[in-house]
Image 1 (spheres, one colour):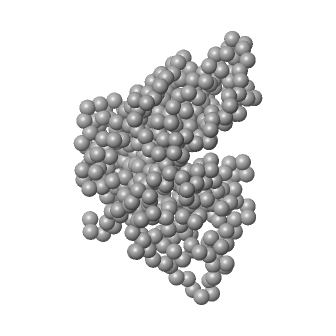
Image 2 (cartoon, rainbow, N blue to C red):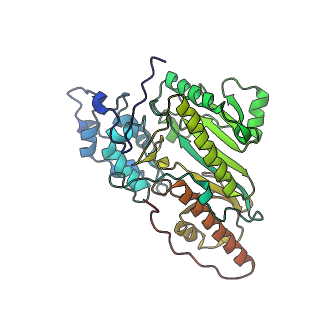
Image 3 (cartoon, rainbow, N blue to C red):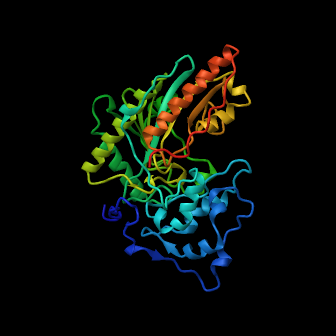
Length: 402
């Protein structure tokens, strides 16, 4: 459509995104930057930790070519101070250019969130070669299910916090048209949230595929729920093992999953599906947002790089009660969630274990870390069953291949 912005050609460095079109905002003379600076004294998020009056002064009046401002980027972090013991990111991007126009605040936030990864000096490595994975079959007496997910954004269209209705509908059109070209075990069907039948809706609920309107203030304050459910939907293959959410927190969320412990097969399908979707999108003149500094570009800085979360549901009744459990996870670069995900309790000692890192390691490295780490956890569980001692492993090095 004519009203949509033209795709912006990005060089691999991510530093040349057409800023000749960059504009500035204007404020009344009685409104200097110092009078506009947010009160962040009680906030616990990465943005509040990194933002200074000087940075704010330099960036406040800048805009991306799409008209997105610094205040829009940080509003969710201003409105949500965070929990004293849970540090959130505190900002989002409205478009690909946000990460460049406002790099003076995004770069330190990214470094704080991603274990010291410095986008000013480091480069992110992408690797979707599933054949490199080893020992990808878990003991299914302990591991109940396996999944890998990521996000992808369509270059040239604003991200969910800032997109117009026309842009959001164009994302849906681009992605659904591409998905219609998938064949074999990847072929499937799209279900629009605005037009699905009650029967289809109930089936998606029963399959645990359906996503609801965002209610978290972190998302609603960032504008993620605007016009809900317009141009939102779910696509899955016929086997229900390859799933794509459209226009939730990101343009797309891509998920490969299945019951049991065959993580290598899950990752192989994930890589194959992603490559095929990307090929089909490129055939239609579009491409994913990506650059060497940040990897794949997504709405929240926490998901930059791979955007990848490889996880399993694993039963650990003894290890989970051991006081060393948290330290073991930390050293293995893993995180635990309850059975139902974030902010839920573990049911029947079943935990959702996944990789802690997203940026600075490749997809292959992260999945291998999860495989090796979960195998270590299961081995610890077996030792505790036999009354044997377990050890806290040495910490993994900070980053993998550059």
